[in-house]
Every structure is written in C-alpha cells, then in structure tokens.
Image (cartoon, rainbow, N blue to C red; front, side, top):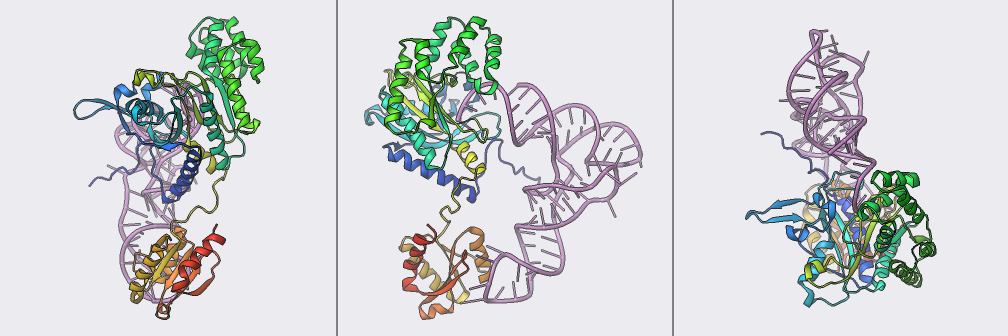
Length: 429
RNA sequence: GUGAGCGUAGCUCAAUGGCAGAGCAUUGGACUGUGGAUCCAAGGGUUGGGGGUUCAAAUCCCCUCGCUCACCCCA
C-alpha cells in the first residue's frame, strides 16, 4: 500500500490537548465577558448559499471557498460571521428582541495564503448589536474589546477609531478618484509613512493637490483638529458623542484613540470603524469592526442598523503564547487519577463513581500496567493528584499522592472527596 | 497574485561530492506498590518528485511540487 500523505491541508491545523486547554481558556474568558454585558450566544451554519455571500466583501470575495453541492446549487463556506448574522437577523426578525445583542465563536474559512497569524480555517469571536443606530451600541462594543483584552492579561494595546463618514467627507473634499482606493492608500500610513502614502496616492492617480490634503488630514491626533478641517460634519459629531460615552464608561484614555489613518477594507462599513493593534509582536490587528447600517437591509428589505466587532482569537492566542501570557496552571484534564492493582479494580471503580458523584473530574487509569506506569501517566498528562487504591482499601483508606509536592498520605475513603476539594481551593487555585 | 528562505525516519535534527545516522516516539521482552524509569531487542527511508553534471549526488545545476516568512489584503 502506498504511503498516505499525513499532512493537514494547507492553512488548517490539528489542535493537541495541551493547545486546546489554552484555546479553551481564551474562549471561556471571552464568553464570560460577552455574557457579562448581556450578549447571547447563537450559531449559524458553516455553509451558506452563494447568493448570501456574494457581493458583500468587495475584492475579498475571491477568497471565499465556493463550490457546487450535489444538485448543482452554488454554495460557499462562510468567510466571516457578520454576513451570516445579517442573513440570520433578516430571517428571524420576528423572534428576536431588539436591540439584539449576540455573540458567536465559530470557524470561518478563507482561501488565503497562510502566514504568521493567518490561516485558512480559523475561529472568530464576534459581538454585535443589531437594530439600533445609537452610538451607545458602538461604545458598548468598544467596551467589551477593552474588557475582554484586559481580562486576558493584555497590559498594552490601542483601539484605533475612525469613521467611514470622515473618509467619505475627505473624498468629497478632494473631489477626485475612487474612495476605496483612497482608503487603501491611507491605511498604509503606519507601514510606509508619510512619504510612502504620498507616493501611493500619486501612483493611484491622485493629483499632488489631493495628496497634500490627504496628508494634512492624517496628521490629526485629536478630534478638535479634525473638526476645524472638516467643519460641521456628521462623522465628527458621531465620534465626539462616541468618545464621551467611552470616557463615561471609564475606559482609560491610553487604550483608545482617534486615528484618521484607519480605513478598513470591507465594503459594508458605514459609520464608526475600529480595530485593535499591539506593538509586540508584529502581527497586524487583533480585533476589527465597525458600524454597518446597510448590510442587513440587503437581506431584510428594510434598513436595520448594526455595529459590532470581531475578536481575532487566533492572533490573540499567538500573541499570548509569544509573550508568555497564559496562566501557569490552566484547569487540569482531571482532578485526580485513580491508580489500582489487579485485585483492587472493583474498589477503584466504586471510589471513582463516588468522586464523580461529588462533581470531581476523575480519570480511572484504563490500562493494566503497574503503579510506576500509572504515576508516569498522571505526570505526563498533568493530573496533579493520584489516589492509589491498594491493599489499604481493605481498611477503608487510599494513598493520595500529590505529584507536585511528592507528598503522600493515607486518607479514609469517606474523607477523600472533601480533602481533594480542599486542596483545589487552597493549593491549586 | 508577487518575492525570499527551506524540504533527510511519525517528530526534532546530523552526515567535507565517497557505507544515510542519532535522540524522541512506536513495537516486543526483562521488571510489576511509587514519576512509562532502567536494561535488551526490533521495525521504520525512492533523502518531496523528475531530469542533468560526475567514477560517485542528501550534498552541485535545471524544472516541478510542498512548506515557512514577507508583500497584497486581512482576524
């Protein structure tokens, strides 16, 4: 038989138990944060009809995995969680409570070329508020980004904030060229600098007069400067209102900033836009989102305003791994391993069933090897305690070994559950 | 789509143009109440694939495929 190619498909990964524990930790923290702010979880299918996915992403559309099902129906793997949400809301309008606050933690697929922090199959954690154009919703989204990242242990990050309306205003002001093209050039400011953007604009066919205006508008670090440049502009008023909410929410000022160079490529954004960057390591943005008041209407027929963000869990995990941000003790695969000998197996099974009843995570050694092997198993798997069920069980006792302190003591079976729980409250927590 | 670097055992990696190797993992045995240890043994390779140079290629050259990183864009 020819040897099988054992690799996973490009850009798609297996997750080993050790990795899964770190991933689950991130997911559980974010879940708590979402729910702390009143967001409810939903799920949607991996596959959507092509007509749902098409025409929503602009140039990005070529990265959607697209195929025909067995009856020739055009379908695609979802590219993000926002467009499926729009379809979902349009379909279930009558059953939802508005403003509808939902979160989702699911896989999405992009036929992209993988690199650091970029995959073809990856998870996104999205939180959105649907059915209100109030900037309170945008502020709440920014709050959960702040809350989520700080809860995960991030000490330093910046949520950059701008408005699609200001990019449109700038585009009207210069009166030439294509808005998306303008936005793309501006978005490169961080990487290629002031002169780089000038060259980029000229290369994209903008006049040098236009380039000067654009460069001028990108110098602003405060909304006040933008106001004197743009005048009474809706985008300015909105950002001022948004920032007043962020202050009231108590988000420290060095975690967010008006950033006129932020553009964001997706076509559907209509109002405030935001993304989060970290200085180290270099990995692009770790969250991205904004207001998209027209998207759901394209499914529902009537306009339903919405805003939200996607937290890039894959990049968040990459950053946390590189910076050693994971807590040293994640929850163990089991609280205790039950070790046993050929003549104590039935007692071991009874003990395990009692401990399970008490709510502990119990791993009964499933092999028939000796104690040495069973202790090695617990050590390799990261189970901190081993209850050795040997001849002492005849006297109603087991030997409980703590693998980290190497201490071992005999404990009566009646006391065991309480004793283990006590250890987890003091020592392991 | 563009560019650079790298492809040797399941994994991590050695081998000056001159016999393809080690550690880990796997399998079998010794040992069976204290961290799969220790000891003994075994299996495992078209050196990514194809072509060329050479007495001789993992090693040099060409093509191709794959992976990684960067660009584009994005989480």
